[in-house]
Length: 276
Image (tube, rainbow, N blue to C red; front, side, top):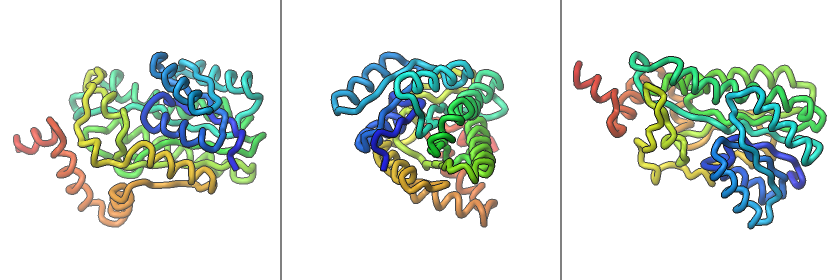
């Protein structure tokens, strides 16, 4: 079903993006993977090639419109078509909103997570329509339920969800499928790349990565959803429960989310609660 489909994966050198590259490679897709770190990209591209997966890599910054147009041009140059676009590149933040430097944190997160999705989707859309292909946005349960200490991340994912829902409706009669994929907490590199109140990368995770869904399992579910042309998918039992409870018992979820996230390593929520 996916054999020889041309797929663009942003943020394809690590985490869920890398896992998606290997999972789609099993389906004999032809890949364009992008990222900002050339060393990681070269390593991932080499590993894919060693598994017989046809791929090209491109150093690109998803927050820049020009780079997204380059990604599309590269795919057309190598393969002459685009069947699937996976907007996976993303970063998160970890800071109380009142302490955050807006430009260094929230604007940066929005530029990569939201505008990166917008730029690439628009650039690729004529080719996706021609192929009657698929647009995928890797969102989050934070796109349904705002998470404290991650206000900018939550805002970006709410924006992604709304954007994808809008264009899904616009494209209703074109044969294009739009998939919103919302993992719960998944073991990936995103927390290691989280930025603090001043936009500096933390380089450490505040959660037990071993207790989360793996990037590989997450990728497997997303590829199944692509094959079935689903409109949305929410992953992990915790993620599904959070979305459901938030719909019907939002006050309860306020307290549950606060309590849960205040237990993270060096959580500013814990410090705030201790003051009060």
